[in-house]
Length: 277
Image (cartoon, rainbow, N blue to C red; front, side, top):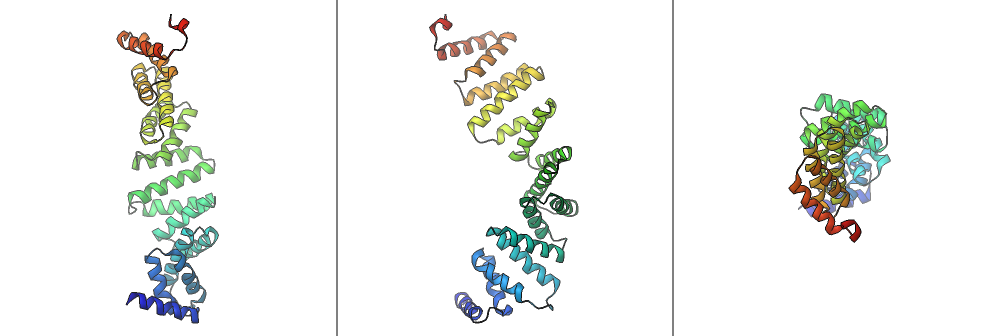
């Protein structure tokens, strides 16, 4: 049975760790079971002792497995070398390109990571599943941004959002960049989606508040500013600053019943009796 077979192979390895044929079956079992700790030394022994007669396809498979296992174990240096070997043996394999690109980004090898990501996206983009494509596009944006090519990085992040409209990291980068650049049409294009993607109430409150400021002060859209400020108030009903902005907008737009309601709430929160008078 399976348990007995694994025991037999473990015993064989203990007696002679150089027997590749004995190491392969349990290595595959451990790999399939995601038992990385057990798989790693067996794969290392297989690669160390494999002879030159092994085919490139066989060697690629084993180097890729070893790269994936050591990557999951946090042994980044070893994983990087194994991915490089796998890539040299098969530069078109999607799993190799995906893992190699990610670990290169972690190592901040931006030039090579960008090259690998370009191959992955341009040659395999149509066959990648949605999640893999989004990850590749996002990492390309990260590389370009790190290399100082900000315009192209923003294009990459916009491509991410076109595939995944709630991709929070891309939305954050785009929104903050366009805010800094005072590109208000682009800012308001992405800010609402970012608010929806955020999970922390305080962060969502601040982003609603900023969106209201932009609609009111930069784009002269008091209707949309009021909508954003109301979103902020829903999160923090005691925010005097936002209530005052709403009061100002309601007054200017002659929405007096709403202005009165906000004024009553302000008076409730006001601590000074003199200011109430």
